[in-house]
Image 1 (cartoon, rainbow, N blue to C red):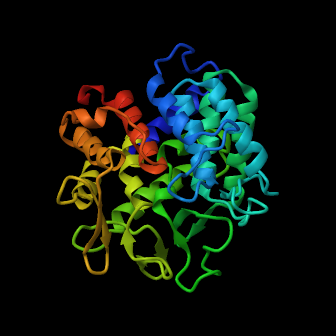
Image 2 (cartoon, rainbow, N blue to C red):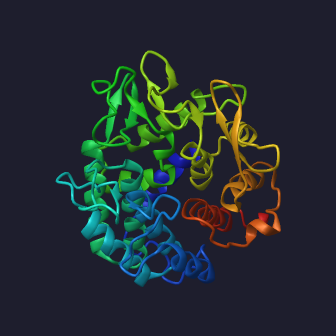
Length: 348
């Protein structure tokens, strides 16, 4: 957490629009981004989740914006932001609806937001606004950050928490509430949000997120569940599978990209997710059984990234090459490669 707080102080000092070099080296390589766009980004800027009925969601739009920035593709960024702004930024509170389904009429069937999507969108807009000296991106980022501060961040029992969505997750909504999703904490984005909307407790939110990941150590593998109930005691949330699965597997990636610095926690997570064949294990936290082992490069690179951070291990050759498969692991693959290039190039 010390490294996150250090970044917070640095950003507070160096936030001006000209703070980032204009001729920076992209951490997502051009050919990688071209392949990703061709597979997952439609001409209107809609990022498609091709393993989930070709829906689009705020998370995917946020990832797309962030990757476009990391690839230094301003035209691609504009297209993705145009779709996001006109098709998802429909709520009265300044947050995005979480899902856009091309098979539904109207395409928005659930007006609730997803706070990780909002965080990703605001973060990417802020970085692009600074880096490309585009004030309208910064202004939009600030509006979303202020909306998150007003509707998604709150205190409960001495902790600052992030609502997964504006509706349905509080103590008043559920007998085991509040419920959180720890993979919604985009740790690297929080210092930027703190500059955009300083009235909110972003520093406390980051601290609470890391503390909850430490505390949510279930089963022999000591892993957090996708959905965590925070009531009298921490436990997997009712109504959700008690498992470490597709949501929670992002947690170590987000900690590494934020350069959290807690090597003991990262080692626990790295060891806990290890599958028998070198993939990422999805685990039933009640029985300890491995439900599935994910072998896509976009999942395996999370373990390899951790090996780099923890032990200086060189990234395997096959994981250095990006070839798109399906939306989610392909996205995680590029985010991992970018994080390694930015902070751990010695592992390449």
